[in-house]
Image 1 (cartoon, rainbow, N blue to C red):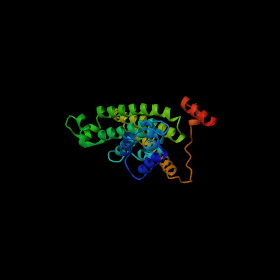
Image 2: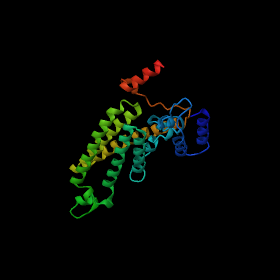
Image 3: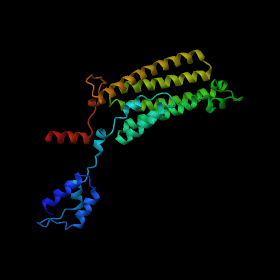
Image 4: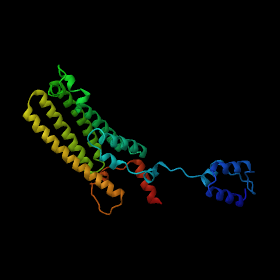
Length: 260
């Protein structure tokens, strides 16, 4: 195939002709240059067809979904929807830890919302007369919610361990969330035993800690938005990744960059 023919096909592709038509023209032609060299379909694709983005290019092609999920809180149509969308987008981006966090918080707000919504009749089912207020004050209901929150507390503690490799703000958020979950679980437990004054004190303490978590979450969200919008104002988050040894893949890539 002569250089003139190759340039002609390149010109046709740039003018909007489809790649399939150009390949068909190439396939029906002799397929050989004046020196007898055949261009394979693979080589043709590399030379002329649009390049497919590598997985590492996702951050250039898609927006960062983390701030969207960080804004999610309360049930149903604020927290769960934003968190579920962020979970899907984080999965597409290949961000494993963020996907786990967003997904678990999405189902937390959905399930906790169901427990606290009277129309679902969960609290009323603990009352012999079907009274919602009576069921919400019952031993069984409060003990069940207490165990529910404590299980979530164990999950938050597990996630907190892994946040120690991310940044200080995230680590403090998960530590406080873990503490608050157990404190609020204890408040429900005290209601089940009839110790209402202690239950009220525990509930206020847990709510205060959750308020601190909300403030840190707001700060983290603003920091991420500022970084995405390339605002020169820096919001320190306390990077902790340097405290941990780099994985073999990252170390090999770093050594390759130094060699180049």
